[in-house]
Structure formats: structure tokens, C-alpha cells
Amino acid sequence: MKILFRIILGLMLFFSISCKKDKEENSEKSKISNPEKLIQPTVNVYIENSSSMIGYINGDTYFKTDIRELLTILNHHYAGRGKKVNLNLINSDIYPINTTDNIDFITALTPNTFKIGNVYQSDLNKVFKQVLDKTSKDTLSILISDCIYSVKGNASPLSVQKTGIERHFLDKSTKGIKVSSEIIKLNSQFNGIYYDKNNGKHLLNGDMRPYYMVALGSDEALSDLNTKIPFNDGKMMGYSNKLILTSNNFSDKVYYTLLKTKKDIGRYSYIKEVSTRDSKRGIEDIKTNGRTFEFSVGINYSTIPVESSYVRDTNNYKIVQGNYKIKSITEVNTTTEKNITAPAKVILGSNKITHYITFEATSKGQSDLECVLENKIPAWIYETNTMDDTAKKNDKNRTFGIQYLVQGISEANKLINPKSQNILELNIKIK
Image (cartoon, rainbow, N blue to C red; front, side, top):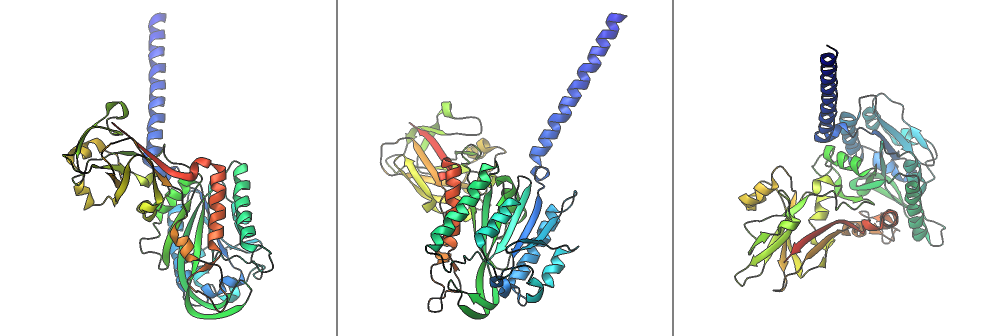
């Protein structure tokens, strides 16, 4: 009887452990299949309310419309489960807006109610430092500002400011928190006084002026934010451009594979040693019938925080090894998906790709391919920048010194992680 009892007890213990293990595994699978459960940060929104910002909230402007839209979507996705979207005004200090409805606050905002704190002091780097200090692994911060540096009286103003913003991001990383940045450029009517670099006053009446939403947080938080708010889908009336700055290299996190399309030129076989069932990364037995060899690589960019327009620009790629050039970069949609061959779709299986790059050989002898997506500052930042916003050269569509802000953050990222010189490295073995 004792032996039988021990057997029954052992079986009960075994099944108990097995059920617990299955439950834990199913729980982990559920988290992975539903990433929204993993990302539920506290969201803090900061609106810079220095005197240079008053023109954006004077009247019914795109600025107020787009911030209402932003808060509406943020409240829908991030509020709840004991968390909420916190709204603040910020200048030399942070001023929480204690209201039951942050959208109503923006609707009722006027130049008079906007003047809280020291609105006459504008130090962009100090504003960033305050926001960075409040940003943690569980926090998503969004700063709304014209991102104009106040430099009057400095001997070498913009270079000093660039070093300052770089230092703030480096200091944050030494505390064990790597903060990525998403800079979204928008435009709005401006009704009020614009202050140039010499504090000269220019009265604008409904002129369109750029401003920025700067999201600060982990790469996962930024990717999640872009899933919830695409920004360029037409919801933001003043949307213009977007840039993501990160200190990470995503080569190990991005799915890519050779992808046979109907427009490729030539045939080839896969090298088994560098291929798996759903990822092929080697080419051999090339046959072109005397024509130029062309082949494609499918990539899933949706898993990393990078703008679609950036990955479509061939100028952002570099061929490190191999006699090839990029012929085209194609975004996958219902039309272009028809170019993917049936065998290639079998290889993809359940894996998703967002783009495929077609490479063209530049000579007959073939060698291995190494292609990188570089971590560069896009051209629109330099096109938006101006070095002189005084009366004679005042360009209402540009922002004084914006490139120095971006360069400072970018240089900090590359010091934090030298491998972040590249966002992604693609390697294809070719015999």
C-alpha cells in the first residue's frame, strides 16, 4: 500500500509541475503574441510655454488641433490600469496641469492662461534635461517645443549648445538608462511675436511656422508609440517629417532573407550552410545567360524604430563589400506582393517583410555582399535648419539651429554605442 501511495503521490506531483510549467509557457507566449501587454508606460506630455511659443496657441491653430488629437489617442491607448497621461507646462521648471480633462485644457488655452512660470527664460537644453531626468525605463516622455536655441551673448553659441545636449544624453546613459528620441516636425499657424537670434521681434499673423513633438523613451516604447500613432496617416494636420535617433544596432533583431521575385534577373540555388527553413542567406550556382545578375533581399523593418521614408532612401545605405549596387527598394503592399514568387512565399511562411531590396551586380565576378543601413541625419533636418533668422533673411519655414540639437543627440548615441554607426547590417554569402 505504501508503494502504491508513493506512486500516486509522485504522479500527482509530476502533473502539478507540468501544468504549472505549461501555464507559465502559455503566459510567456501570450506576452510575446500580444506585445501591448508588455508596454504600458506612464506617459508625460510637456508643452514648452516660453514666450516664443505663445503665437501657436493664439486662436484656432493646427497646433491646438494636433495636440488635442495627440492627447485623445494617448488617453485611449495608455490611460487605465492605474496609469494616466500627465500634461505639464515647462520652462525653467515643470508645472503639472491638474485637470480631469487635459483635452479641454488645450481647447480653452489662451495666451493669458499659457503664462505659467518664467515664460521669459528659454533654455532649450535645460528643458531637455528636465524631461530626461523624468524619463525612465517605464516612462514615455513627449516634449512639444519650437526647438529654437536662445543664443544671444554666447561667443560660440550653437557649438556650445550642441555639446550641452550631447552631455545631457551621455549623463543619462551613465545612469543605466539609454534614451532613444523621435523628432516629429509639424507646422501650424502662428499669431504673435517671433523672436529671432538677436531677440529682434517680428509680428506674424497666421504665418505657418514649424514646431516639434519629441518623444523620449526606450526603443520598445517608441516602436509601440508609432504603432498606436502613425503620425503620417493624416490625423495630424500639420505633420511634415519624422526622425528616430537611437544608440542601438538592430542587426540581430531584424528578420531578413533572400527573396526570389519575378523581376530578378538570373537563377541561383541556396547555400545550405547559411540557410534555415525560413531564412536563406547564401547564393551559389548562379546562371544569368550572359545578362546582369540581380537578386532581392526581403526585410522586416517593422520590428525596429525607423521611419519608412528613411529605409526607402538608397542614399542611407552603403555597400561595404561586394561588387553590387542597390537598384531599387520596394515597399511591400498588395500590389508589389504579387512580384514575390510562390516558392519565396513558402520560405517566408508566417514571417513578415515590409520591404525588399534589389541588388544589381556591377561586374561578372561575384563575391560576398555586405550592405549596411547607416545611422545618418536625414536631409530634411538640414533643409529645415537656418543659421540666420533675422529680419533680412527671416525664413518662416525653418528653425534656427535645429541641426545642432539633432547632431548633439546623434553624437551622444554613437559614443554610447559605437556600433550604432549602422542601424542594420545585411550579409549574404555568394559563391
